[in-house]
Image 1 (cartoon, rainbow, N blue to C red):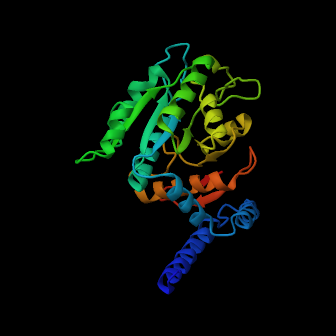
Image 2: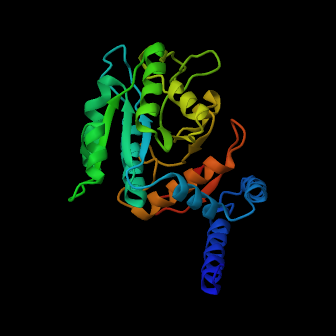
Length: 293
């Protein structure tokens, strides 16, 4: 039997979530899209979206749960494969920190082999100790817990990527897989950069990991800050943030804002039903507004 106090708490929680839903669905940029998408999503969930997202996270993530975060974009690999774009890794590191602080998950960063040193340095700057995966998992149960993560190479060769994707999912049983500013294949299996150049050879084939996670029912979400490129690639589901390069989660050190962005990302996992669907959410920032698609 549910007590009266429990029902009251539940009603209060729903009311708060409903207020947040309406707040984040305000059409600040007047594109005329979000109201229709929001209404359709609410009809499907039959409850506030943020409440549904919170319940989903609560049910699937726990202390020590592994979250896979793929990032890294080789830039001018014909000069050196160690040159990488600078916006993906910082965004991935800040996202990992926010999810770790909220849920106690263990982030495993996946990136091209040559870009590992930069990713490790970025993760350390975000407050993580970069350890081997097993050590990072053990850190959660340590008498003196530390903020631990792991940086792993992901293959650029397709056959090896398939094998590694299966190994990662089987070994670590991740709850969520996230891609941040990561190249994805088109229907012909080609990965292009912003200039339209073929970068397939040098890019880690994380599409193989997405397929394995999707086949096993693990939700995936991509985060990008260049919408036009994402629209051309058309990954299964993505979040676009209209924000400065290098700030995919918003303003530096604004933890509250980072958490808000993450909540919207997890909501998108539940709302996006068709590849290519776009959800707009506007959140005010000190510098300017950014939009999530």
